[in-house]
Length: 102
Image 1 (cartoon, rainbow, N blue to C red):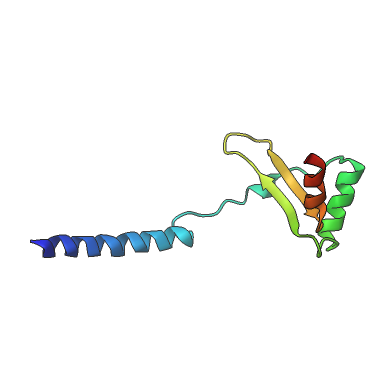
Image 2 (image 1 turned 135 degrees about the horizontal axis):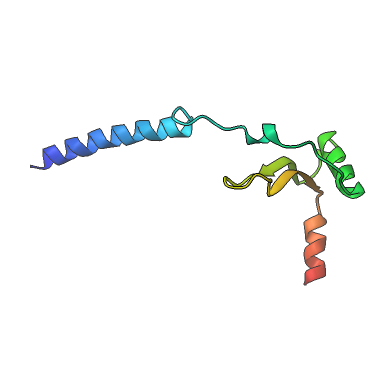
């Protein structure tokens, strides 16, 4: 009586494991490259352009956090919410900011 249920659960486990692996390695879904149709970066503030150049040229290698070309586009929107953001946070910067708040 229990044998049929255990056999069915074992079969389901194998099937769902295979589906999970296929999804994980994107065999079922093709990855979209949505950044290929972005417009060139237009005019930026001087400090934003300087930070972008610093990060892209490798000047942020000692930063504790570094974001390179972060982009977020929502499905129904044409304009990106975040457009190729480059930010580096050096060590101690967050600590000093928190001290000012406290």
